[in-house]
Image 1 (spheres, rainbow, N blue to C red):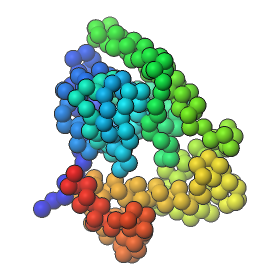
Image 2: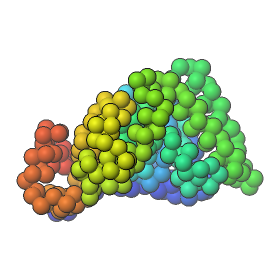
Image 3: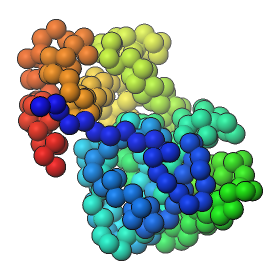
Image 4: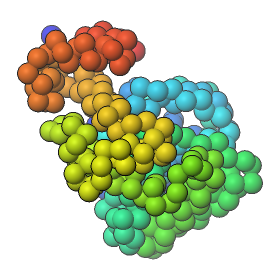
Length: 294
């Protein structure tokens, strides 16, 4: 019997009465939840998501970690992340999808990459904001809603501009709550470069010396940057990225444990299984079964 795999949704999979676009989608959350019941189960997507909760409670699970949902919660999701939720019947707010190409057509890819809540594997994907800031973000969501009310004249440029204002303000609020005061702006920039390197190379290169050479730094300097940014040495960051990718493969593919080990250039599947259990307390098989039974 074949393994179940997670669906990967694209923006055209979501019907809207207001605008038809393969790169942008906006809806009031209550309408979105009623219209698209299939999103309650774990799934992935190939676009970015910005979600603001104005009422209701529940749980939102992102990449196998659960976060409480409450009024004032703002969630940030990136392409490829696995998520699902359980929300109370009175949940409402705003939800926005966009492709990277939609944003970077007007703004730079560099600016999109600077929003660490999207592009850091170690960033918390949620923040709680005060009522005044909820109103500020709601203003921009309402402008988007107004802009797309008449699809005959809605402006993609305006939609991208409002999206940028939402992201920029969210990032200001996010930094206020999460900025590590022990790390300088330069160190945070270096850490972002290190994360990009890990993301691009962790499948083939897991030696710390490789990343030190790429950054033109000593291993000691490299660890100093990562410890000040997130309190972890780079070896732990690399391992955590391997484990996250392993979890995604276990629940989103029918690959065997041996094939997943080979995916990471590991010749010994038993070593991979021991490593996975040491970091998660589950064997790979146990983890796969636990998610599929949800």
